[in-house]
Image (cartoon, rainbow, N blue to C red; front, side, top):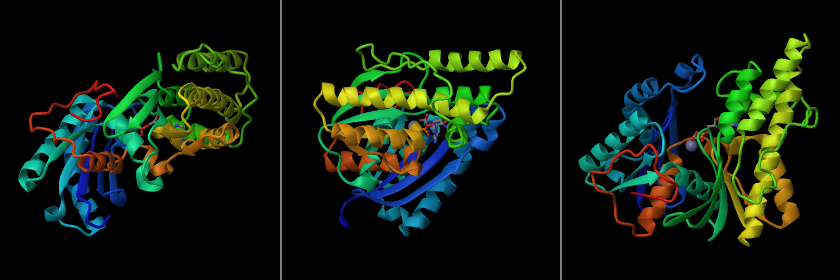
Length: 343
Ligand code: KG4
Ligand code: ZN
């Protein structure tokens, strides 16, 4: 792959300024500047703070990625950037930077979908994606089941959350349990010393015949359970509640993902997005996929959460597929549908 084009990927859809450098499916650099510390005290990402942080982090993060990969600006063959979905102001910083680099370096620009990039990134670790595969994307903003005939061309939505995203439920339940934001990793850690069967929390939409999810009822059930114990003067055993909540989420996610595989007769499942970093989700998915004869691919945790390598990975696929580059007029589209892989 030494001769494959060198693609610079830019990700700014939320609080991470992610820059990736990829040649073919080889990852050369993946640098991230996060403004999470600035948001933590607000219990959620503050869009204006995120945009400003992207602006300040952009140039140093790009330069750090080039240094890490040992390449120069003049070596870059194409620029890929998250054009949506995400926070409008945050996306705008990345898209504007990408246009400037594209124009300044005289190389093509590819505006890509953040969600499709979460799928494409796995190739940097496990090689080309099987065609087709089922992808389950679970992040702070999205929970979706997708049929992916070809990540560079065609992504079909099979189902998604009807209310909260899986990561959003983790973050809200963490707050109820007094754990810091973002809550996912804290619940994951707390759960290791608790029991997943301590409390029987509800499994929303589990056997409703759809491939949709619902996590809002579960989140409310956890809050009511905790409130009731607190009102009675009882001490909450946080690890047990965290583990039982987590079990309810990953039970539904893995069952629905395998239902999708069966329904579409697809034997390859990919899990991506920030929640795919969850240790219990990874373990249960492995167990159930093995039992069902489904091959499972999950990127390492650092590639599951938002990063620039995923954008470069999808950009690299677009270049390889001969897709027409984006024009310099592309907008940042905060509500870009998953079916739009590139613009
Ligand atoms: O994909 P991502 O980095 O950003 C979005 O596009 O949303 O996902 C962030 C989400 C947050 O809700 C965070 O709590 C969750 O992923 N998350 C986890 C874990 N690590 C991150 N959730 C559960 N367990 C984890 N280990
Ligand atoms: Zn994401």
